Image (cartoon, rainbow, N blue to C red; front, top):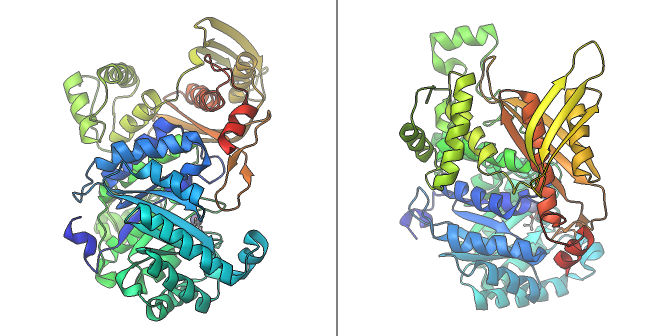
Length: 551
Ligand code: KIV
Ligand code: ZN
């Protein structure tokens, strides 16, 4: 590992988008998407990547293993491949699964956890404090016998007795833990309290000086970023974060907020990260597109309005001096509205710009498909920006396996008559079916027509439209989330140990938002079909798939 890693003023960024982020309702990602997100996180420069919970299912295990073996050897902007981490409950079965999934990485890490708050010990674990200490010693020792880099988390530390925490953490250190992560699992603490908790741990835990203290906050009271920064001010040197702050309930601490706070207020914090901030926007969009979780427009750093200065007074101030209303330049986080390519740009320029955006590894066939789509877009839209290209690539290349593909679409809507859609789809057996339907609006009519052909019981949970760039010819991006209404036992949540219903996100981009809407819905349906395997030659029912996953 490079020297920076051990610098006392270096804050390690531990990204858990693919684990805690994926635990958020509806964030189910395909293996291909997970791999792509992992690559993007590496380009971003995260130091540690929690790639998943390998004991959850064979699919989760395989996804973590592929990330470890492929992405776990690619150097980030700081010159090191990321540490690849797998989560494990404090059981030999989970620890074995985690180790077997991550051991192919250049730098593997096992992350195990056990709750330490009274309420969790009594009602969830049904263990007394002595038994908890015993289990921590046994399981951390076991994990350490397999792997040299062990992280231990006392779950619900935010509501645990600090004196008990000092004891548990000291035992975990003696048993071989190298990073001690302090989670505010339910987002209960305030910055003063959380900062004091971290300072107390730093002062009173025997052996802590040789370990890294990490902070992991949830956003139930909207305090995750503030608590994380308070933790860092009190000595934590690892922050556990997710892209766009996605995660259980109100989410986790968002990577972009913490990194940009440390960066923008560097004179005050005196701390550095290894993040290439210019990659932030790209990864944010990728995660939003793949999960179907829309970023709220006023979200700090990555929201559509974060750098828009629309009010007249602001514009006037901006013209006089940029810093009157701008503490960060949009370019610092990769926001660019620059014209990059146009109608006359050739394949060479297209390939070159994609490589600069981090899509250098596209197969020739994918590049051709993307180029064709780009040419069609350039006919409609004169100014093609980096944001347009990223949306196009997300839509054309990283789409799920296409069981059903849009072959044609026609809508009639307005104030006279019923909104009607005619949809033509290519089906898994390559035949074409055309269906018409009416709805409450054009999108509803399109979705009803698609439902008639695909014939699966699904509910639309969320629908969001976003303009990729400004202007009347902007590319409209649609993200949707759907839920399968048939029998599905869901996915295991490692913390609550309950099954959580699976939902699927889809993304579509086009200058015509009705076309984007159809593409987004189809991409979510295709993902669902791929996950359950009830099309395309696999004869598993959703119930069987889930049973296999749980056992
Ligand atoms: O929030 C939490 O407590 C967690 C642990 C597994 C670290 O995510
Ligand atoms: Zn968490």
